[in-house]
Image 1 (cartoon, rainbow over the protein chains, first blue to last red):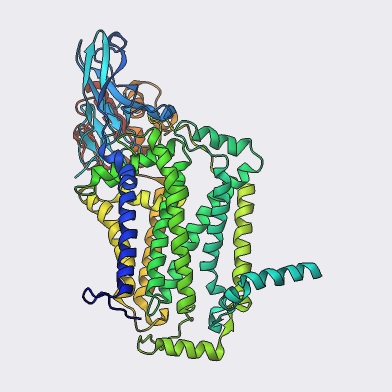
Image 2 (cartoon, rainbow over the protein chains, first blue to last red):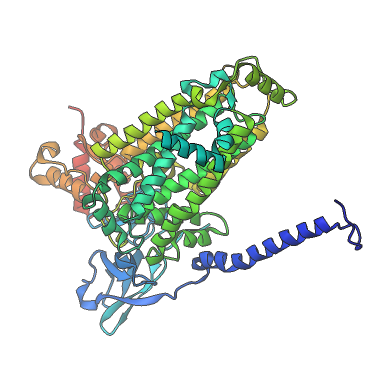
Length: 169
Length: 466
């Protein structure tokens, strides 16, 4: 069957074919936008960093070693439970000066441990080691530990809860 | 009996199932494929079916919520009827499936079954391999314990090294910019909906291609594939000598599949599922996220690659391997198929197995990690219970030296064994090395007091062969 429609070379059958394929594709794209958009949303929508209280100023000894402080991360959903917890290494350098590092190794994100005797941060995964100022002492990390902003507010130490630091190139 | 037979005849008449499926089941296959060498593909399929059945069963009880998944896994393992066995089968079934996929792939590669006209059989198989690996990873993550959380972070960090888009991919994996409420729901959706749907599609396609192109005959040396006449030769051979797949060849698949499935069941009963680690608390830093055994070789690879080029290896390494596998049938789709005439293929397989096994062996002991649980040196090892020697030994314990260095069998393996260091370095050299570090050792110049340093040096200098 090759009925001519009268409008050029397009047969009636080809017309039906093109219309069917076009309708299917348009419908797929239309529903695809909200679907793909919803799935990709986490890479677009960023929560704002927020200050979190990690303890009273007096609870940290001046010149002591690093202390692990826990805080609630930037996007604590009601069903996050214990996974909303984050941690940082905090040290009181002087009366009102604090320094805080991410617990995530700059290599591949494993949790580094502060070894008080050695005055080093050590990573259990691939052997990354950092000095007490956060700079790389040994191992594969391409850069030092990530620092978090800290401030003192009304006698409380506050830490700017930030995303898990991702080392990019 | 008579009624059942009549019922079947009625059903078959109305549905036409035996007419539709019978000829496919009984299609003629080359007689030399009805051997025990050809059972691994079907065994992979049987383990997949087991994974679907046990996975659906687990989903009846599992709660895919970041805060409750852990408790629901404990509940499955300890309190539900047969829950421990079902979880065990799902875990060991995954191991079996990865193992069988590997064997199946090696066998197809060694006998060059990917050559004309089965290029698409191979390519769909490569896609299935990738999907199976993603299932393995997401499966370890939905086992939502401490290791799962840190593995997710490590995966996101690896993805972060992709040029330009790294940060986006990392956030996509985490479901945001931290681990939290969104992470597990997404991993669950990958693991039970998205990837399985793709697996069903590609397994169907893969099987369709096996029927369409026929099971590849066991190769003979000196009988090269020529696309010009391969199909005629194959069809003529099958017509002349072929035997029906069902049941002449398939019974061996059934026997081997039966053994595989029963083995998984027995292991699930005897050993059970893997212990859950501590709860998935990202602020609990006493974690060492080692993946399940089938990823340990890659874990070792990540630790051992030279830091200067690791970004390239991490990102482009897997991409390159995937691309090579994908392109293989286009690189060579004709010629000899027998491994006897393809020494390079045999060498590549041997080399791959050797390097993966080597990485495995190292990965299990992880000598590149500081050993935080190292037993402190005792008075007997130190050789004194007071004085500078003893103080130096205690400093060795306390200042972190022990985590990386072994003395008399105790300590970590990251750095050199120092049992006889006194024979190799004198006091000056020891002082210099401790102060400045070097190679992969931090310098301790800024943290040790003069007395600690001299004690340590005295202690280390005393480490000599008698």
